[in-house]
Image (tube, rainbow, N blue to C red):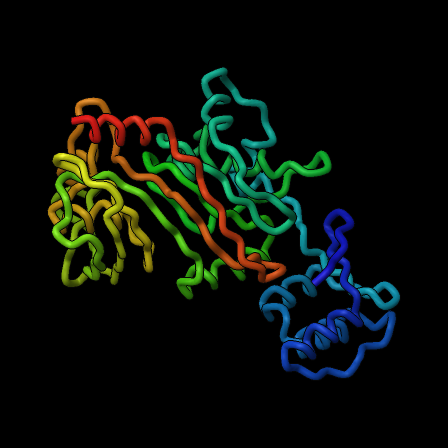
Length: 324
């Protein structure tokens, strides 16, 4: 659906909204030009195009208006430095020279008014683990979304382990966040990974459906446990080396360390993953990267598929193992 943006405001044609709702199977009477915000909110609710929670919050802060035959929604709110540490840090200059390179190492694969996909390097945390921590992907995402001289919030929809490289999806406003969060809960966001594992799986492809819970003896670890959360991972073998293999994986769920736990459970821990039984003399972290991210755009609904370039350290590990 076409829209115009004027700063914080999203402008939509009332006639186009009616036509869009009708095409989707709804039928609502037209709204009169210049209607009161309360009537505009009720009309928008009847159309069924936007979450009730979102419209209610907009109405409560005067974020719904009508200008002639255009609906105005205050959809692009600025970040709140008091509540959003990443936004506050992104506004400030790095306090030391060491902070800048980490943030600069991440780059945007996709960006528009609604969402952002950042390509995270290995070694960068998605979010801060301590107050004031710099060099996170969240901070880099706010900077990458700089538009018209202003910073816009960026909220991650999913996460990656600190030492896992790959694409991470961000919402840039509340409506996008509500829709992308719902898509994540509905397993409608596709995440494809590549990993190098010890040994060669007996089955070229398969599915690991095994619940994952915390390891009582080591807080930083997870393990397959009968009482854990449901976790499903699909895999296929792409390349076979002397005593290792390159596998591609897809997640149905997003449990902490899911791929690492499931592959170790199969007897094929990731190369370099010392926490789950892996090892490598040259690689200091797990050989795991996100390859591709697929999702429906939170505004247009169009399919978006983005591929992350292979990091040099991952390519070097493949070449080294293939030469043995």
